[in-house]
Length: 319
Ligand code: DGY
Image 1 (cartoon, rainbow, N blue to C red):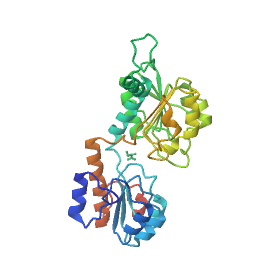
Image 2 (cartoon, rainbow, N blue to C red):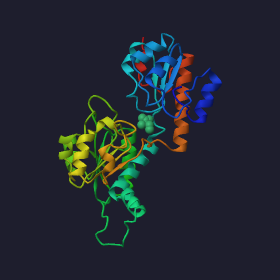
Image 3 (cartoon, protein in one colour):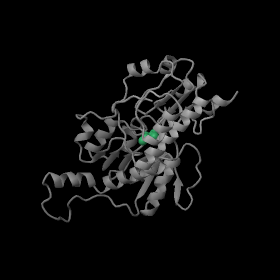
Image 4 (tube, helix red, strand yellow):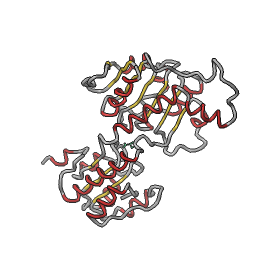
């Protein structure tokens, strides 16, 4: 296990097998992973660990399962695992609401300049109540564009509906509407042009890497707010910095960046209209306990030679 996970899952694993748990707060280095993985039967890893063919080969032919403590598996070379017949587990569903809550928290915070206002107060900048002081964006009647209408995108739509937002979405496949929520599937161009808020909920793939770039940012409204709780590389940060600095868009709020953590001298950190939080969208007590359990259950099923309850490459089970 490349880190201590919360106790429900940890205990389950430790009761089942002999577990070596990386004890530090910071992730193991590449060298440490390559060294400690030798001869393991199963690997429970985090999104901070790059698990590629080299790691799988270092583990050796006994490696029966890779259980990722995340719903996103872009840190795992899934094709390499499949080629070796190794099932890869992830933690879907249980973090949907927590992640959607965070996307919405970021949306509200960026729209209404909550973080900027809080800092201003602490820095002694609150002189009086002023009619034009710290104005932000309205939600009611505004348009939210959801990029990626999977579980989390849909959960964001449910929240947005309560705030009176008009909801557009894009998805690579024709998506069923979300029950009880008024939504419209549109093309990406329309979404960019019409949305006051653009919230990203795509997995990181070759198709989504750099999806938000200088060109697509140009198509957004000058009043638009970009929210990213998906993966950092979906946004070209240099282009985002230029767009925020020049007020080509109004604001951005990011839970994910490249790299993570973002270095303290990164230009995005110097902008008042950019909120950055440290990849904590799933960081609620219940959600992380459930993630630890699900990751443990996937690991244990793989060690027993059983089908993983949540497997991203089920083709390994086909003869
Ligand atoms: C995931 O599970 O992919 C999330 O990014 C973790 O918060």
